[in-house]
Image 1 (spheres, rainbow, N blue to C red):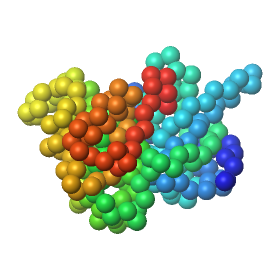
Image 2 (image 1 turned 90 degrees about the vertical axis):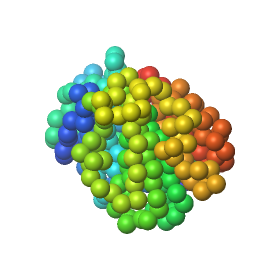
Image 3 (image 1 turned 180 degrees about the vertical axis):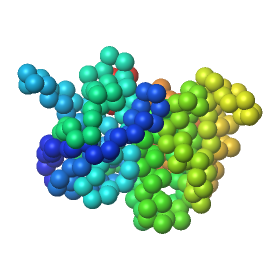
Image 4 (image 1 turned 60 degrees about the horizontal axis):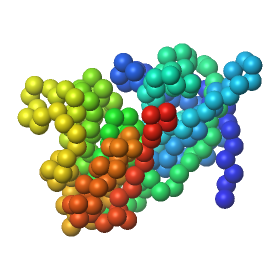
Length: 241
């Protein structure tokens, strides 16, 4: 088993996704590569030697020594406010990874894929979408993206562009656009039944978001007859990455 080590990572590009989220691209010399869906540990070290670290999903597939993250500011957090508000191009942090081997999508897979993301849970799912496009895969993807309101949408411009074989359904929980007929509410059985794949298609299901969202969505998928072994989940708590 490969031993994970901390590597210096220089910020080479950054862009705002929303008012409270930012995509960061790092150059990490010696980066071994990664699979879509994996995550990394990020470590900050203060001048007095104090360190703090958090885990963040990667937002894009492997691209040489580049690693891309999208980070949402966590209220009273130690790491995310610095990454979102203060880190500048040329600054360095430390990364360790890649981590995780279950919540991943591999380009050789041909099974239909259902992606269910809640809030910033879209990040590893976006890595899968981009990996599919990069590989020229013809595996059909469906994305159900649950978010509070349109202003919190990550990757808005990219997801507007045509991507053959990818179907997207937005589910709003607090405030929906006027042209959307579905009322603002939490994810429900009919959302997954209408926007997802029938269980008989045997899709691989990936669910990522806050713990409550993930548990609810996974239970709904089971109620619709999806096999437990085909439902892969990744969750984070209020103080997680």
